Image 1: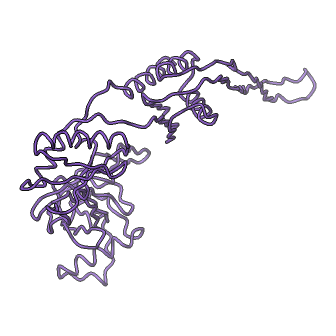
Image 2: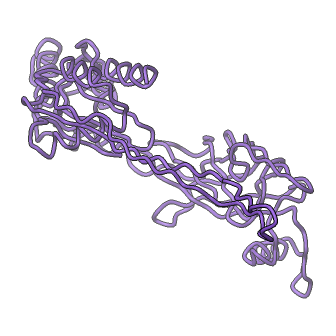
Image 3: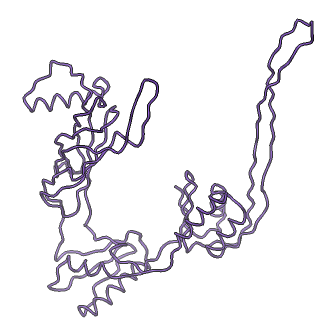
Length: 366
């Protein structure tokens, strides 16, 4: 009980740091500067009998036949029975402004019933974007962190042996789409949209622009976007570099995040509640099974039998009414800990307070 309360208090402390300014580039992105997802289908060879079962994964057999056909080997009339090959999906992210010749990491994931990709090598695989254009080609040995071992009577699996990575495993063959428009629209987009944060960013950038260039550079567009005007004879990349290093104090919406699976509770520093009274109790039902031996009387020609016995006990704990006058985060945490609740109980109480309209914050349940 004390351990869980310590975890909750620690998370709440982390969620309420001292007010501090943050660089603009850490809370906002440049519009149009983003990565692109790539995907491809390929084969991993060289597995030590841990690959796909070709009868269960016919697409693997078809891929082997197609690959060998391109190499001048005809096995159309044969039935390969190898277990050293696995069909995989290869995924990667094409960074913004990536150019031909650069390398990127790729992730390799089994598509069939392979047991492990350890020791395998990915054969040359083309990676395409959403527009079906090939941007990169991947190949190389697969690094797998998971382990799988099977014996006659026992097996063990640690991690995920059917997925791995190839560091710098793909060459970029085509430049990434998009570039900086020197005379076009320049815009910053907030990662956590907020009107107050957007206004503060505009004020900081304009103060810098007046001192540096003698002109205002920024204008708020909405709660997510800030438009920029580039000074004459200043490169766009230099403008974003200078603006990104400016410090601003971001604002945030009052929010409570609950994870019922792990019992994690995170409460933001701006969370407020109205005065409410809370009663929380639990009903516990205990069922105990026991056995009693029934012995017949002497000379009765009876049989000794085992008679099951069941004892049922119902108890209800808690149920007292406690007032919560949490005008601040600290008072709310103190009141919940004083009630001696476990994380699941605190989650139930916070959901009930929100339903009653007394929790003035966004409630996020994961």
